[in-house]
Amino acid sequence: IKHDFLTWPWQRWAAERPSDIAISLGDKEHDVQTYTWADVSSNVDDYAQGLVEQGVKRDQLVAVIADNSIQVLWLMLAIFRVGARYVGLNPKLSSSELQQQLVILDNDYIWSDSEHDLTALTGQNIVLQLPTVARMVPVTWQEHRPMTLTLTSGSSGLPKAVVHNAESHLASASGLLSQMTFTAKDSWLLSLPLFHISGLAIVWRWLYRGACLVIVEKEQQQQALHWVTHASLVPTQLQRLLDSIDNTATPSSMMLKQVLLGGAHIPVTLTDKAHSAGISCWCGYGMTEMASTISAKQANDSSGVGNVLPNRELLLRDGEILVRGKSLCLGYYRNHTIFSILDNHGHDGEWFATKDMGEWHDDELFIHGRADNMFISGGENVQPEDIEAVLLQYPEIEQAVVLPIDDYDFGQRPVAILKTTCPMDAVFIDHVMTYMADKVAAFKRPIRYLALPDGDIYQGIKLSRTKLANWLSKQ
Ligand code: 4YB
Image (cartoon, rainbow, N blue to C red):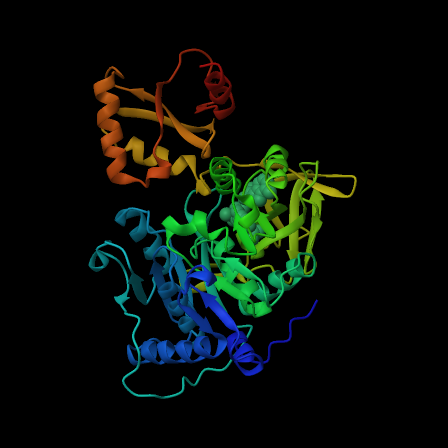
């Protein structure tokens, strides 16, 4: 499946359909701000020139710490336009967590819309501004140029910066859209963050199709799902949407045609409920390294994730999912170098080993969880070892193990099991919780603290997570 962009996608659409609406900041019915493709093309050129005037050059790295907004979108497209690289960071992270990631990235520039004290962080401040002199940015469209870095936490704790070019993003978009109908008249809500691959993938599908992108404030997201034809949601977001429909009981006003689900296990009961409310779902299995969705299907009564999309290949080896194809990233970025993610040692070195376990059943892929310990809470990746490391810095804590427990709203949430040098009473736990509130993002804070049990909880010299999880399930 080819895409054929000979220039920047927004320039192509500006040439072919200049007055079509490209971006809407709310409900079309309510006289909200919209931008045509002609507007998008000229705004991106202006903001790009604004960046050039601040010294931003091709191949430099710009870190953006913000929730989704039209500003972040302009900034990102302008960064692409000058041939620089975009990396989004989660604004919910603490300053020390951010700085830890920025040290590895060694970003040249930094931009944030939040209260983060940027002076403490790596990178020169930039602003989104119009140029003082009107000049053309000299960089031309090159789909092989590294464009985005997307942070993803793997098994080893520290997040990896996954590098993609436009070619792999467009390959991802074209493969999915060969199966899922998304026309130039449709609109996709920017319903997931631009610091995650699921949010970036929305932008690339929009650019690929020349459709309409809808951007609203966080508080309006729920409402906005009534005005758009498409959205990407993690299962917990869909659950919340369905709960709200139950309350208002006005599903008839919905334009929503398709919801693409992914990022975590998708319960059949959830997609069934959505179907009853008139929302058709697509179930996807994806990952950062493959520029989002790898396999997908229209939801049905099986809990599988369908078949492999065009531009991707997938293989099972000893139950582990291996992937490759046009949507695969260029590599991981560190020390100003892009390192191959492929394990070139074996003869299957062409494939990327995902650490996800899978199975084929009646020509459909089923995901059986990760080989490592990561879990997902409210759509955010949680790496237990990260939380443990912070806990262990607390004076009275000797040992810490963090495990997930099921939660109706978040899917899962972390629980901490501690060995302490003092009694684990309510006052102590209160102090630890205050300490954690200062150190890690809310979604990473354990919701319960338990004392490490006696008995056989070790495997060799290390605590056994399996045994502890078993014990936890009986608490
Ligand atoms: C799964 C899983 C599944 C991922 N069952 N485990 O555009 C999309 O495809 C999209 C739409 C809505 C929501 C999310 C998405 C995504 O991109 C998700 C991509 C993602 O989560 N990437 S990640 O790098 O943060 O995590 C990847 C891991 O997530 C995988 O390796 C799996 O372990 C897990 N996962 N889809 C069960 N359907």
